[in-house]
Image (cartoon, rainbow over all chains, first blue to last red; front, side, top):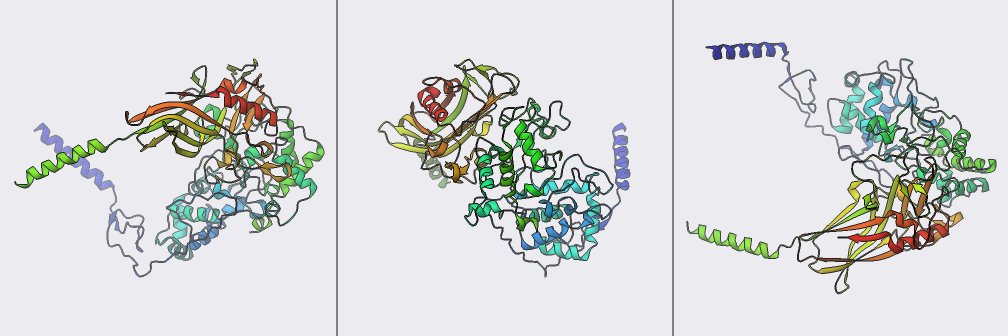
Length: 365
Length: 248
């Protein structure tokens, strides 16, 4: 009897719990044209089998001397996807109050970075790191100064929901975009979907970001033997690429970055911002930040993860003084506290060379 | 019912043949990097940049934070001195376990008695951007600068850390300084019979202290050595002498 009672009780409880769930019939398949995001009982999906859109592969041209770019197999680049990504990148619809787009803090004429030390979000709140340049961002193995994302798709999720930035929710974004016939049409053409979800949004943004390629600076033209650099620029080039300046170990190759994290002696301990250690939890990563590309550096001020330097002169002076010792400082920092000891002319030459990395075609996109 | 005996016989024949022909011989080469027989990047210890725990021949205390290098033309030889190329170029980051060993399967059934490799990449093959799509390209590239006759290509080795005091860094970066070839070839005796055992292991050990002694007493310096032919030559000569050994 006791057993029977228990079974009955459990059944009653189970039925009661079931009653709490609101049962909504509708189509639960996102690929159907009558997809209902609130439905939990799948029924009567309608598919528009007549209109399967063919996408056009995007011909991503890799510049000479650049490595292949990794393209995720689940997000191949298409003409339609890139165009949609560009539209989204510049559309404030992604922010909670429709006032800010990605382009608000990644301004093309500033090498797709923010001239402000810290970007200000939709509610007037500031972040604590400078917005990174997106120059050649498709070749980054890690995104953000602390490497908190490992793909452009993953990275794009963050600013939209960050309360210091766009302060939106993804359900709001999905709702807004699904109520916009233009976007419904464009997403359908790019991804053959009838319901716009967050995954499709970040995929489109990532496709566009992979096209942000800069490889036509005066430096590139010099390497292609199309122009000659000035004696000062050439001397700066020698300083950059030799033990004298030793810039190339962290900012080398045609990407002018090493895709690694380095502590370049900005601060003594304890660090205010732990950088990479925030992500890895490793003591040895404290004070390390992703080394940025130097392409278009003339226009990506202010510099360093916290935008502490507003001019290239200040940056060069930092290395010329040798920085500050900390337990995780990179051995590549020569003569800590003493520095490179470049003459004023050599410093000017180095800066002149750095400015040859500016790419007008890219900055005017 | 008639088919069952036929099936059983076929199965026995198949198993028999399989046993006779299957010689699944493999060779694992483990790269080790030691000071006083202790691996410098042992698996579970934190690197402590504060402690200069080693002492070189010149009496300088130092630590090692980075050891990355390239070996190329890795070959083994049978007793008839026929060579077998195992790998063209291999990058080792001593702090990462994933590339500190190599395994080669399907070896020819021979007796092998010699291993050879080039430390670094020889001048003919050390070409700018040659390994553009390798994950070590960014880390190991050697700057190309026609003005200073730097030829491009790749470092042979990056050995970095601090010495004398905790705030004094050194960088032993070897490579094609001013276009000269400081890579070197080594032959080391090995002994294994691919016919006898299924799995063989060779440990290719780099004795770190020997980079700094015999024949040249090498002093760590806070200056870079990529533009220092004497330092490059001294390290090459030490490397040729007794830095590497085989431990089977």
